[in-house]
Image 1 (spheres, helix red, strand yellow):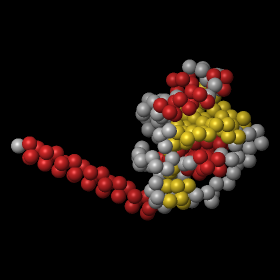
Image 2 (spheres, one colour):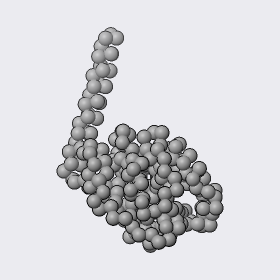
Image 3 (cartoon, helix red, strand yellow):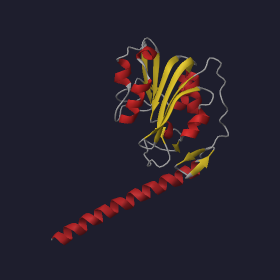
Image 4 (tube, helix red, strand yellow):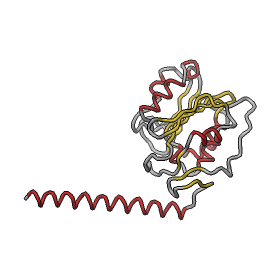
Length: 222
């Protein structure tokens, strides 16, 4: 998934010489509302692999982001791109670790995701919100080359994996979750089920209100 701001960020921060004849992986590659892939493929990479959990345009391999290292070898790609995925994964710490480890030393990781204040958007679910300071901490074991806020309540980052990479332990890190409306180390099933129940209830009430509103307008019109 992507949007106009994501495409612009990628276009400005990925050079032809960084893509040409290199191996690229895109995690969360299903083209729902735009993609960096056409641009990057015009740079003629050696390989471009799109990974997602759903078949569709832009998807070459079906794989959960949490299982990335079970599907691909460590340090097997020069560039990793992930746009608008990271808020949707249950175990974000494992996914981030996979990002760092599937990329070669000296490789590039480019990520876009949503921040606090962005509405719930389940594809199929939505768990987390990331801020500038979160990205600084999460990717402090890499060289941060670009980090900025997205005008549409998100955050963009480009990092380079150092040659002497030593992965940071994020097990105790707390991140804001839209599910429980606070920072937590991890989510539990009970909190998530309760949240989904509330979301469904709100949607049902809104549907009933719209139906009633239409009925009243029709009655008054008569």
